[in-house]
Length: 209
Image (cartoon, rainbow, N blue to C red):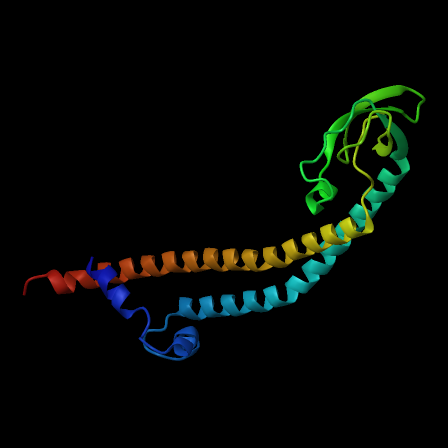
């Protein structure tokens, strides 16, 4: 208990904020070798994160762009934009002509002929108030199922930017985690050294003359 109290009271001298950040670099009686090591680790990780962040953004963004471009090409090759006919009337929107009505889509059964010549029915999202027999166009996949259109250039760009931003956030997080692990290991070493030193010192303090 005494050793822990001494350690708490002597770890860092009270200084200003800037001094508290730089105290490990200054010579003082309380600075330990592990404090210097921790300072160098912090500096090394700071420089590494600064250099690695833009590199990670570029590499991850480039890989994501290539992947999504390839996906878009594949989807464009296997998906078909074909006509389909409504089997039932689509519901009417409560506020016809409103901005919400223009954006609202209702699932309705449609009939279409797939690229293999088979007549199929499926559910598709359509505009309000369409009538049975009205024709729309739907995207159909290789197996004749209704699917999403191929990735657009905007979607590719957004997904690429998202991947690059994720990489930019991941690098500092990894740096902080690495520093935390190193600091804990050094702290455990300091505690072990304190226990060893106290084991040598305690008998002189506690032995009666």
